[in-house]
Image (cartoon, rainbow, N blue to C red; front, side):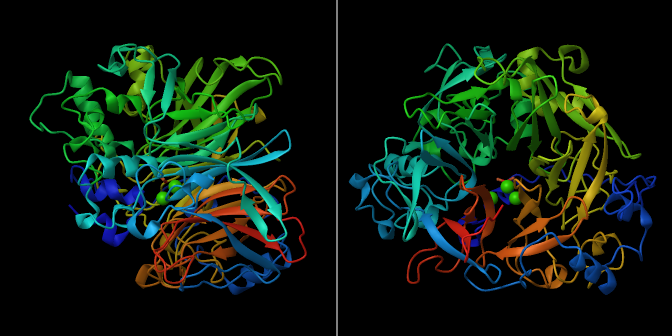
Amino acid sequence: MTDKHTHRLSADDWDEVNFPRCAESDFDRVLETTLTRRGFLSGVLAFGSAAAVMGPGLLSASAARAEELASVSRFPFKPIDIQTDGTVHVPEGYQWKVLTRWGDPLFTDADGYDITDGGSPELSDRIFGENTDGMETFVYQGHQLLVVNHEYTNNDINLPAAQEGTPASADDVLKLQNLQGISVIEITEGDNGWQIVKDSPYNRRITHNSPMRIAGPAAGHDLLKTAADPSGTQSLGTMNNCGSGRTPWGTYLTCEENFNGYFGSTDAEKAPASELVGAGYSRYGIGADGWGYDYHKWDERFDTAKTPNEPHRVGWVVEIDPNNPESTPVKHTGLGRFKHENAEVVVAHDGRIVVYMGDDERGEFIYRFVSNGTYAPGASTEGLLDDGILYAAKFNDDQTGQWVALTPESTGMEQAELLIFARQAASAVGATTMDRPEWISANPHAIEVYCCLTNNKNRGVQPNAGGDDTSVNGPNPRETNHYGQIVRWRPHNDDHASETFDWDLYVMAGNPELYNNQYGGSENITAGNLFNSPDGMAFDSNGLLWIQTDGDDSNEEDFAGMGNNQMLVGDPATGEIARFLTGPKGSEVTGLAWSADRRTMFVGIQHPGGEFPDAGSLPRSSIITVKRDDNGLVG
Ligand code: FEO
Ligand code: CA
Ligand code: CA
Ligand code: CA
């Protein structure tokens, strides 16, 4: 097993390293695609798919083009250069500050939590957890609440006494379980900037052991039942909480991504209960060893030899009411089970709820849920995230696409099965294999949706984990794609509930200094904004698109000139993209939210290296605030 803890792999890369999929090759399609040119940006300049079909030579950026973009910029800052150091940089006229970091107490009884020895298991659910990811802000009765995911743990940091971070006791496991999940914190801004309101009644940690309710069409199904919960409706814990979402009714959505890594087996020879379950284990990467958390050796719930259905109880989108600390989080099976990145919720014209979701693994799919019922402010929201239809996206090479309903008729699977094994269901209808769908974000000022396709070294090289063909296709036009792209679609009839759409590529990342072909990127990639592996993404209230990266920060070879991971901002109308922030070496920039007055931006710094943010200390995943010097609006 590769040592994750030494190399600080992003959680997304861990699966591939530890569970290499079949290595069949399919070089049977060439790199060239034959798209027709139908960009969205008529009247301005066509980027993306237009660039993809313009062929080599026209893709790389020109100085004139960069100048033109700068002259029409909507961005109120001077873009910054790449950085390779161990701290955060923002443009002139802006400042940043740490709001909170892993180990900070949320309650005064945890004031003594000592990160140098990894802290005590008893207090590990009273502090800010590790590896911050998706987050959202809420205002409730005048209180500003920040809800934050803690995606995974770097075990060598949290268990400094353990050999290579491998848990050596049930207490070690409990500590890891407590350091992940979610933090709900009340925050307030004073003379010294933003701070956590310690002991606020809203402060709450939700961990790998917190009680959850399972709702929706798969709730109570045999595949969700365990000895501890024969009802199949009451589970414990939400895990690998990656991206976030929010509902129009003021609740938080947390998305369970690489949940498979927590499970292992003390009896690797034990046969799965059925062919479907075995296929599911294989498709979702559930193996005998897990990812080094070793929960299964100390906690039977994670031992698939003893609790084979437990993995079916994670991989969902979970709804949390931050305003009610006593509320039980709800797992919505209607939204399907896969490696959820985030959940972007919009309301269609007729009031139906539409949820866009990506499944972040090489060659997996983009999904959409459309509710049967409609939303009205103040009315009951019961069932809105469960009673409806789950769809998978099919992108055609002619820049049109369809949402294909996953139903018993279309998939040959029972309703509960097609939700629990959504990947197999989407394969059955021939959904389009994507280059690792990360965050999805809907433009608040237009009926259009963007999705980061972060990278996919297997594109055109080997099929996905279900054996689906992953030859290059329209929105995934590059073999061994290590730069990534952002696809966007416009629902037909300007209706998010419409079954068809048009699509193009907003940007293809690349390195025009090195390549004069598709790997040079689309025309809106310039020497001044090089990046790779777009991942986090959010629109601000002005309709600008903030893009965060989780890529190769070696600044060498193919990635020369890209520096540390970063946050850029894009103008959907012009295609212009500018670098706003750079993270410390080794970190991923992920998670973005704004204060109620839009004068503060909250940005997550995950798995930093070095001594960020405190000299002489262990590196600590942190949330920072970014403000203008003049306290002006930042989004
Ligand atoms: Fe946790 Fe796909 O990012
Ligand atoms: Ca990550
Ligand atoms: Ca991510
Ligand atoms: Ca990522």
